Length: 311
Length: 261
Ligand SMILES: Cc1cc2nc3c(=O)[nH]c(=O)nc-3n(C[C@H](O)[C@H](O)[C@H](O)COP(=O)(O)OP(=O)(O)OC[C@H]3O[C@@H](n4cnc5c(N)ncnc54)[C@H](O)[C@@H]3O)c2cc1C
Ligand SMILES: Cc1cc2nc3c(=O)[nH]c(=O)nc-3n(C[C@H](O)[C@H](O)[C@H](O)COP(=O)(O)O)c2cc1C
Ligand code: FES
Image 1 (spheres, chains in turn yellow, orange):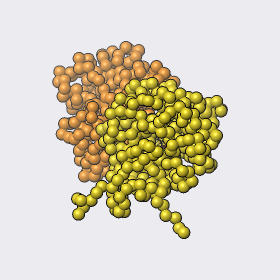
Image 2 (cartoon, protein in one colour):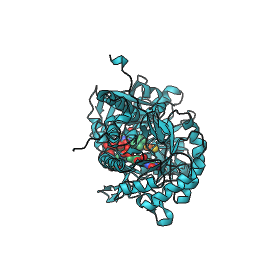
Image 3 (cartoon, rainbow over the protein chains, first blue to last red):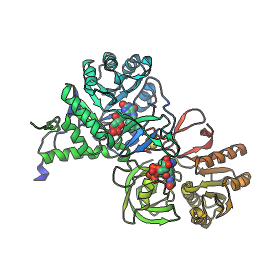
Image 4 (tube, rainbow over the protein chains, first blue to last red):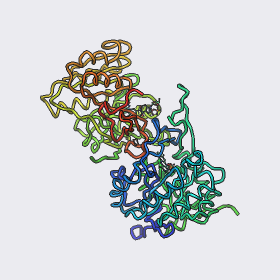
């Protein structure tokens, strides 16, 4: 009696924040959501993580900024964004009208900038959480990325936590030798959750001209090519750190998403797949539901961290 | 303006030359909204290689629910599209971006280089349909070789445009750059529309600026989304700010672009 079957429960929560389902969009790949309004029922999404916002507008890098690589792409957008003031005045009104959760991704040059940004976003109606991009250079420390030194990552986390009462998700960079140490440092700094991975630093060369394909020379790799690396990191972090993990990296299908959930992710974000398949998020929500029915599971929470490893 | 994701069925695929072909797709929702100068993002194949969609100008919409693309084979994605057979499908997003704005009371010059000719046929056909009194359309087409542009030139003539041709190898029209016949005629033109290689657009834009004739250019850039979301498709603006080709363009006033850097 298929028609009587109860739809599986897709709800998940991160701390006190509940989500209708575990499917979110990844920062920088979904604009400010409006761009996808004709292709996706935004109200169905678990959450939208918007393009990274800084205190002041940023122009970003010169072109070319994107290049395709096998089953992936490199980007060097250079964190172009409208700045926090215009984000609140121009972009929030639309986002506020969406039923899905809104997570604001933030970035800064200094620990102080992260704190000031967090203060400005706190109390703005419609914002449900902050996601802290720590893959940016710390200008005061010679441009070393915050996310590559545990002490710096922890200091950013503490300063954001001190500046807001919104849930704080810290987004980890995969360009480190020990992802678990980084995750632990951030958790100890008070983060409510972790999201990973950001892009892997990569490069592509035009052999005809012997020039880099990106004007910035190097850029961030994303898309299906990075999935095994992301999955491994999510599994290691979820197995060793007690706060919830949001899995990101190469997710394009429900099967991919379920792998991350089994590995221990409480939720997932879809990035590059939005570009080649703008309806990917909705298909993933439906596909997770179908998987749960097939597996006879009543709730998505029953599969989170359900990886079976040999005796 | 609504945008659509539409699984479009191939009606015909016609080879025009060694590397040029024309794909006619059944795409009623996109075709009904499309304006000359707008583009679609086409999924090439169904695997992860190539991963990203490819942008193509809308070449023609004849009001019968079909959408035509004029494509030059340059790599993997365009090769896969060339292999599509009638009855097979291709997933399109569109119509995207901002198109041309034509003043029907002015004498128009259209300059197309290579596959950049694509959006110009749509512009002429729509102008003819909307403003039957507007007869003053001069088309300047450039190509590497005659085979690439012969049929296109005839099609423009059939719909009443005056056509000047130039080819690199001199196999059709005059030998040399299309900017030469264009420059000779520029004195008679009041508005100019250009699409083609960057160097050709820069030369045309400069000539128009010197002659004080407004010029609109259709730009290219590497695109990941085509929707204004990835911020990947930037070009340098004359004012020092970037423009996003998929959102602010692809058609922009020539004076907004930093041509020489
Ligand atoms: C708004 C817009 C409209 C376009 N309209 C048309 C059209 O009507 N007909 C047509 O044939 N082509 C058009 N193009 C160019 C077309 O998108 C590229 O030729 C196509 O993406 C190449 O794909 P590929 O997989 O075959 O080549 P790839 O294997 O990706 O690349 C082959 C070569 O083409 C270059 N290339 C790739 N993408 C682009 C690009 N976006 N712009 C310029 N060079 C590129 C690469 O650098 C490489 O040298 C348009 C581009 C834009 C941005
Ligand atoms: C074009 C582009 C822009 C991005 N911008 C941001 C950003 O502003 N902030 C951020 O934290 N991550 C950004 N990312 C990283 C993604 O959110 C995501 O972590 C990464 O792409 C891996 O997921 P994917 O393989 O599903 O794309 C960006 C990625 C891409 C491709
Ligand atoms: S192609 Fe993504 S913003 Fe223009």
